[in-house]
Image (tube, rainbow, N blue to C red; front, side, top):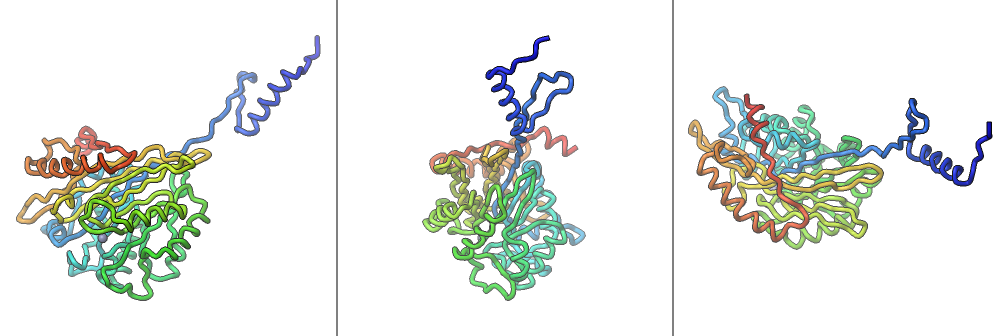
Length: 390
Ligand SMILES: [Zn+2]
């Protein structure tokens, strides 16, 4: 029997296979030793959903009041629950306090605890608490809101009982599906109400933000997302300071920026940098729910950001869906209902359909002109909704 001769060619193949087996964690198939299966790196996926401002005006509180004196918001979110819950992580701005009775709407908000419970039931996973209403009920409002979120196991960021708590909990690290995402949250101010000591509300202070971004980077994240409460109310175009701040945040190393506060939607763009990395800048998502009815305020958008990760982390998709809030009068009170714009006419009244059409017919042409590299999706799935309803 001839001894096998290791030619240069064979040697090269052997070396290549050996190297592949070392670098790519190869497996040989036991039944056929000549077969070499090379594993590709595992790809992780993460779907994030962002919603705007959860407001609690007086009529919303009245509308949620039940005959037995408790509050229930299930109906309000019923048609949005599916879409929100489908995301791996849904993040929303909680723009009221939980400061117990007397419950109050504008201008200083205190909502029933059931509001938080039902927001969680609707699928929201993480609450942002740095906004201009954080100090509406002083120290009690800040601390009780935090306490309620902790007791209902709702992760939150933006306001803190004191510096020690902030140090321990901020920047906020979200770990999910093999991703490490750092979340930041800041507000332009607190309506002139001083922040009670020793509480902390994260405000837009570039020196502090720079420090926080440095701390965020040290956490070795796949992405840093900054949630900014900024801009001018009822303005559908971002003002210069939002644009300047967004550019600055991206230069500092923030990956994506999600804004709120104007009570109306503002444009959204997916920017690509010199390295080919993509960055979402959504200037304002509008209200998620409110009692407001002025032009645009009763509509808003959900932004969906899909990430994928193997050896690098990438944006695999970014899109948005539109929704609108109606206020049907039932049992003598205004009720509030959030509907996706893709809801079939058969499930809403002709007046609600007209309201939806007014919103989409004005916002879509504006978005077409001003949004960049993002697309609207129609998400409402009537079949699974009806199944769930049975
Ligand atoms: Zn606000």
